[in-house]
Image (cartoon, rainbow, N blue to C red; front, side, top):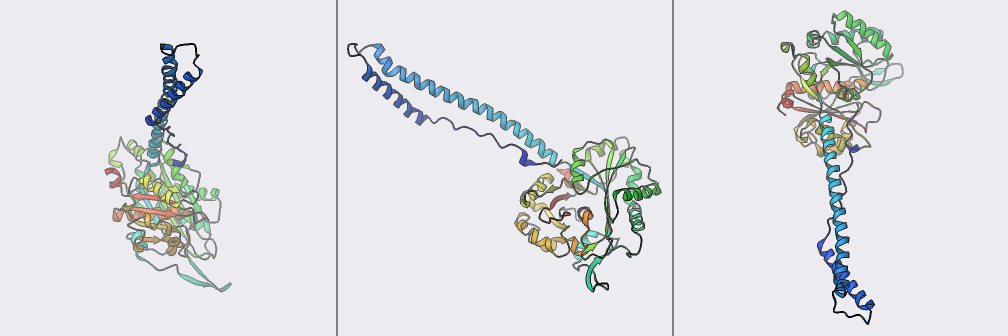
Length: 415
């Protein structure tokens, strides 16, 4: 489940310490009232120069004041003890939740396919340097100008295209090698696919591709969509398991501003990775990057969500060197949405050359958009060795973005 720091109770409300000056004034009042009452109500036939008279005049009022003052001090001390205990337990909870929030995943392999990019070299550098928008063409059926880019001609059956893209992802040398080198354990698969069909169809196609690949590792389907998958995986202990995310978007019609993509990410918890390869350390794959827990904007507070994402990565805001937008469409909405956060990121907030709106170049890629941005940021980390920030909004409401930090593996090890 997401780490909600707002659910942690506030510090204890401590009572004010007794003010000696006020209590001394109260002592004078007690003695004055006691002396006045003694003089007024003292019997006329009883001498006043007696110990009992002075007890009534001075001692008893003082003892009453001392009793009230003692009760007040005792109340204060008991409240302090209770408050100290409350704050101690709160600090423990705060520490535990922060530690839970700072759990992260190692990226063992990543594959990204886009229709318009060159498959050699750094994809991140290509996207950051390329400023042209989507190619456009005229739909002869209605005369509308359509901005769209796809892998293949729309006449090909979607199932055939889907099979081809899945096979291409598994054919990646790095991903295939890591999957084959893993010891005896399970691969949990999350299929994040939008291709105009249902989940059963996607799973059937993937199963056929998986069997044809010759990879014998046990495979389990992990339910759920979006970046919530990362939250759940980080908080659910699974022995001898890795997480494989396959995100594919295939546009099924003539829709302006849409695009195709195919992404695969192989992730694993660092602690589980060490135990996984304890018997065969020479097989431990290289770590491409470190993916930190994503943070969703709640109640429209993007500044808080950004600060939490930075806290989960345990880095200051000025450590972010590049910013990747996705899920906001190809109409340059990202800059307007990001405007309230410009001052929060000193190194990238006002430097547009360090920002990239991926949708402008790829089109809106739907449920695959956060994974596309993550894969591009991972690619940037491997080449630049600098922390990256992903801001994605796969949901229709673009004002509730996710924030996620991706760092070089060396930075995490040093920390």
